[in-house]
Length: 78
Image (cartoon, rainbow, N blue to C red; front, side, top):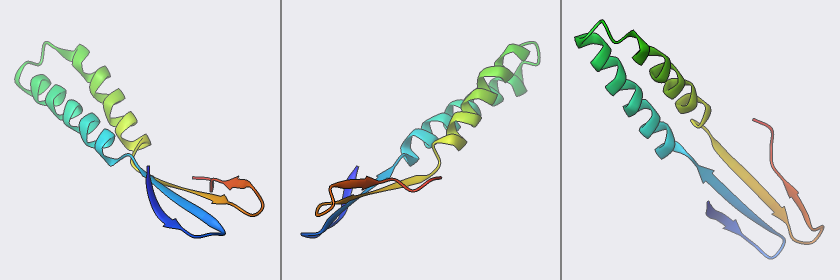
């Protein structure tokens, strides 16, 4: 998490998980290339699909706002 704004009234944090998506997409690409060269390894499609799903799930940014005066935390829905 990185601090994007820090004032006396509130604190905003931004969480970027793009590196996790890149790792998942790279793993899926490696598994799909292995399947392309050896069609007998059809069991490689399930982990490749799971890697793609996890990569898409982590492909977003989350902003968290802490209101210092009211002492509340707000996380907007995705």
